[in-house]
Structure formats: C-alpha cells, structure tokens
Length: 199
Figure 1 (tube, rainbow, N blue to C red):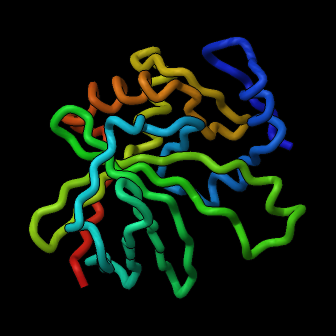
Figure 2 (figure 1 turned 60 degrees about the vertical axis):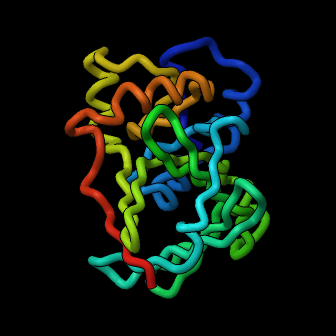
C-alpha cells in the first residue's frame, strides 16, 4: 500500500482513514489530469442549477460524451462515456465570485468485485466551466502547476502526497474556495480547455 506523508498538518482520523483506503493506482486511473480533493468545493449556499447543462454534450476532439441529467433541485447526474465505457458522477455547479466551477464526485463502483472496490476512496475533482449557447468549456486544473507551486512554497494548501508524487488536497471547503478564486484568472493554472458541443 502506498505510504503517505502529511505535508501540512498532523495526521487526524480522517487522514488516517484516507491512508488506509486510498491507492495511488486508483487515483491515477480514475482522475488522470485532475487534482483530487477530500472535501467538496461547495456548501449548499454556493450551488446553482442551470437547465442549459441538461442533455448530451460531445467533445469536439474525440467521440467522448458527457450527459447531464437532473437529480435534484441543485444536483446533476453526469454520465461520462469514453471508448464505450461509462462512468457516473454526482455533479454540482458551484458559483464562487464571478466564476462557475463543476464539482464531480464518483458514484459507487459497481463493475468490480468488493475486495477491489474497497481499495478505492472516492474524492472530489473540480474544474472551471463556462457555457455559451450550445458550447460548454471545461478547464481542469493542471496537476503539474500545483506540484511545482507546492514544491517552491508559492502555494500553501493542506494536502498529502504519495511516494509517487500524487497529491490529494485535504483542505476544507472554505480553503478550497479561496484557493480557486485566487487562481481562477491566472495564466498557466489550467490545462488546455475541453470544448463540448450540445448534441
């Protein structure tokens, strides 16, 4: 099992549980290109619902698709399809300042056996989003930018780090919101935007 070190705070029960359950392989396979977080980016006060998101969106540079369905008054069910494989997430649209973010949290793993399943720890990921007419733009935070910022002490945010360098944010929701708001308009923070068109 991967050995974790807490770089910001002394270990607490929640972090110890994370150390026991999470595997770097699980994070990498599910969240390649994303920054995983133990806590959500939102409180109930930050959530908004936009019917414009509902429906199926196709990526312009691949055949992958994102299908948003309404799950409750402020929650979506997202089905992501890649190479004929499907994954479902609880999705929330979060408004922080003038920016919109998409917070994703995986639904229960159902396609693997129980022993394999308990070696995965569900986490949140978030990205900056913009919707204009029939085009949805998703900008995911760049993990390499975060890693370099932490190593140079330019970024100070609670996290733990695996022996292979995978970073898991352990910051509170309040801290996460301050973090994304601070860097939401900063060059080099995000990966190349993902552009989707309404099907």
